Amino acid sequence: MQISEMELAKKLRGAGLRPTRQRMALARILFGSGDRHVSAESLHGEAVNARVPVSLATVYNTLNQFTEAGLLREVAIEGNRSYFDTNTSNHFHYFLEDKGQLVDIGSDDVEVKGLPPLPPGTVVDRIDVIVRLRRN
Image (cartoon, rainbow, N blue to C red; front, side):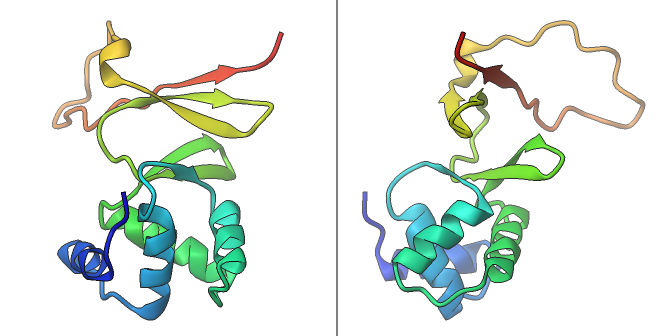
């Protein structure tokens, strides 16, 4: 599923972001081949391999901007370890500990029951489920 430059620019503008050269280059890597999970470090490595001159700090900033704009979903695994998911629909994840890899679980495959009463004035925005797997 290739996405054209025009479609990428439209996607960024539609999210309220200016399609700068660096944003476009990172968006091309992120959204050019279907749904995926990336860390800032892995995306930076892909950018370097694609000869995109971008710093790791710029990658972090861009990922955070894309997340705030609703183009990505951040999946926090541990306090300092996050992945960014191009699939922003409601779904859950397996985390393969030995590979450091996320795998999608469809939302129809998990049922959440028995939530405690919500604090007054709040509603459930989404429920994140991460099932951690390790080899036995």
